[in-house]
Length: 492
Image (tube, rainbow, N blue to C red):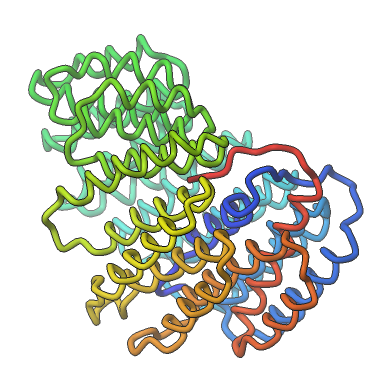
């Protein structure tokens, strides 16, 4: 039911971010802390709802979401058990092996976070075995190169080498796709710190465009690993008219790693590059996400913003509002709306995202009327959104789910539930993913406000067990984070 529209990566991202977004002063409980009784009750209800699920896809995603809540509550043993249950759900999936490989890799990543490296290694071994059975060689190559760097990070050098070698052999079986596969294998090798192997494979790429992209990826990985001199040497191998792309790749890798000073230094070298603005935009958003409001504002001042103005300043407004700078948040929100008004395009999902972010920022800044006005604009944009039948309206439902969570965070549960109803009754929705996502966000926003009996009552009215499981887990994680009172930097 669920994974066709929201793959496990989205469920993982959601589980990590939703409670943090609604409780910005929260952190995870200390290992070994006993969960609070109210958190335990919510977790038990989430487990009971998960047990009702018939779909292997839904069980897999739900157990990951539950594991995040259990880890936040300080119960790593329960989180490990849930992740192993998610892994076992893969055995029943009537789904492409590529999806099963990706799921194993992502579950292994989560097992590492709860300190179970042995089961993470076993999960990656399973992924490698699944990859071996994939019929199409180029798909098999992609699967192996997804597993290999993870095995390397766990210290399984022999397993990683075997998987990288298998990826290269699989790529060689299909000459028409070989260069494209080599490009991504080289990136994976570089990300695993195997720079010599990545360089050697890049040199085997005949297609110039693919070879240059491989150089960019290797340069980015070297920069992320702290080898700026090596990264610049790789960029020097690019033709002059491709060097901007190489620097942009380096900037992306650096701000993703929160190495903002290095990212700024490289962005400053991009004076004549068309990618310069988007490079700075990524840095600003990264700094805002990391809670470096002053740094984000200083970086934003370096650029005469054009196309990316709405994206940059909506992120900055939200960060400023969370830091208690209401005046700055309102000023940045106005700049974001100016940028959005200057866009003459039909990308209504983008309009919905910006208005939702601005609404959240204004709500935190105390501008209730402005927040409601932007939420109304977000709803209007979502209703106009890309509802192409091929995607079963997923763009629109994604926007509505984010809006519902934001309205709940802003203290308007009635509006949030009205938005949720639009997802529930949508004509083209074939699964429950986005409704569950919205329910999780609403519950995470409402739980810390204290009326748990009313919240339990509302969640119990939800008809499908997926939505109930996500909502109970979201509420539990938000409460656990609030109780821990250790600051984190939530994602905008």
